[in-house]
View 1 (spheres, rainbow, N blue to C red):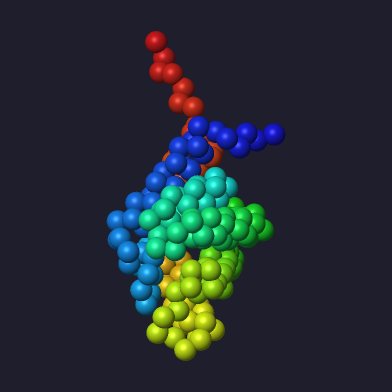
View 2: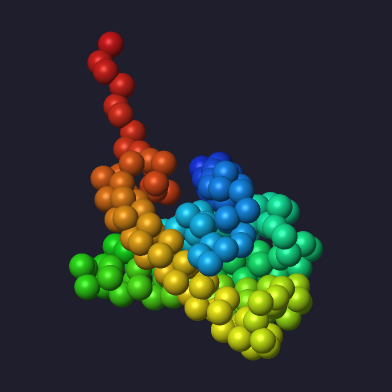
Length: 197
């Protein structure tokens, strides 16, 4: 049975979580509020297509980044729970469409379906946190109008980060794995024979 918690995977998970936090917090409040949430860290949500350890890493990274959210404890737990569920579903798509068997059209489908979960789950569920739990609907006549506005806003911003920035990231990681670059693959490098004495 293949060992899941290898040193490489633990290190990679730590890097993914740290990148998520750094890419979110470095943009301050525009990562959490605004017409379009400026959160390029969401591009990392395609990583479960390649790495199973990306699922818990994104969850922890999101939880840590949300410590600075205006929406408080609800965002720390509910926001990161949405990321966890989306990560699991993206990982399942990665398992369903294995990259070794993938041809160009399959890669498009793999990326399109894998990115769909972070986009839709965030767009559908995070406005509930913002409007109904957080009570942030000033300037709107009804909570439903505020929910709809936040849904559209998150749908657009998530699509931008997941597909606009995530697609080049997907292509880069795929190329690195195909080249056998150790940091992007779980395969062991070929052993170099010792030179003759």
